[in-house]
Length: 101
Image (tube, rainbow, N blue to C red; front, side, top):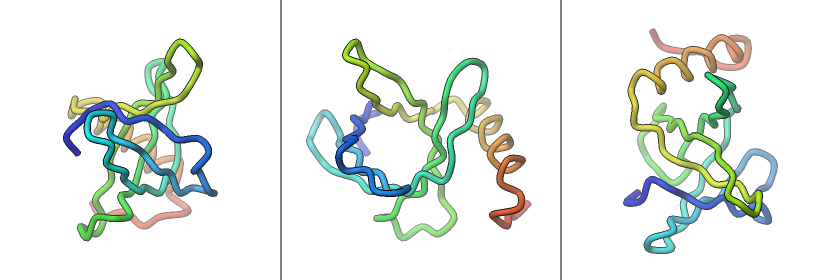
């Protein structure tokens, strides 16, 4: 993905499948939102790319809101935040997923 900021198309959310559109080039990406995690007063989504052949790869995205209260996601690049959010995700979902150490 070329752009860090992705617009969440609320009308195209089905169960846990989320379609995100790159604001810069209009490319649409498909994810499964595995869960949301609260960390340091922010909300993050742990997303599994459904159009990527790399098994086990997840993306941590911060959920933000614009002035119209529309949701959008920003890719988290800070490894410390990614690790902390993923650790919380693993704690919250230990009974649902099997994690490699």
